[in-house]
Image (cartoon, helix red, strand yellow):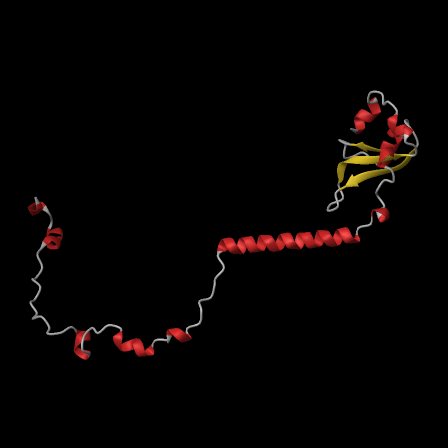
Length: 171
């Protein structure tokens, strides 16, 4: 079949000249310079004395490092919380209500609702002392709930009728 190939391809299949015979060397090049393989016995004098060897250093593993960092963070949070508790005085907190029995919690308020709208809707039930709308501390957006403190505790115990139509717009 190969006889039908052109001459340029037949040249690729031509045999090469045989490998010339060389007599084997007496020794390998690295054996000619020294006395052959000897081992590490000749280098023992250069080794360190085991009595003078320092103890190996202990390396912290990944799990130990993560556990240590978690423990350090927990200690920092506990310390910070302890400091804040020591400094915190509830009597100096301006947004706090004075009496929890006169305070009404209103949730699911529309984010566009203002304090004046809440005052107008809830003043029907009694005189209001203070209204606190809660806002996000980072961006100042409303959180959707408020605390309404009435002047008298009896206003908190009155029966509220069904939600008025104007109030349903606020909620």
